[in-house]
Length: 165
Image 1 (cartoon, rainbow, N blue to C red):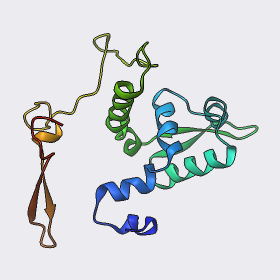
Image 2 (tube, rainbow, N blue to C red):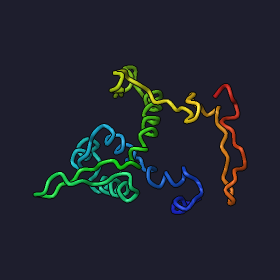
Image 3 (tube, helix red, strand yellow):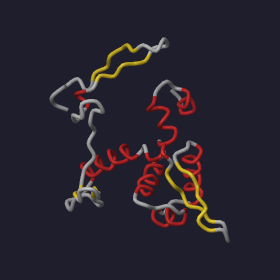
Image 4 (spheres, one colour):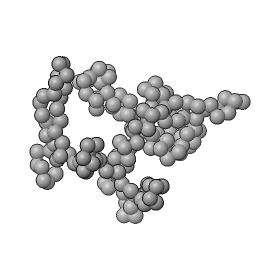
């Protein structure tokens, strides 16, 4: 599989990596979920080159993840806002942040805590079944590939070692 072929693959992860597969894109998205909206603020916070930042923001716009909104007329200035499609990335971003917190935090703990404003408690993201609401781990999953006639076949189970790794 070649990079240029990914948009045409019958694989959601391959198609997603076309949009999110760059190292700066997820960092930009993380900042957007923290409330950063303006080009200059991204550039200042991340230390990313203006060209790279402009390219990543443009890609996210082209794929409908972000939209620009004008906040000043003279001179014209814009900010970036998440679309509903972009908001749908929140669970994925939280999952990646949780993984990073678990595996790359220093002895003091995670650099940023997320508080649920409804109950006032800090939280970690969890994956739950949309039907029974039970937690889901890789050991609890079977993947079925859709065939040309819209049937599902070829069951793939989660990790082979169902109790260990």
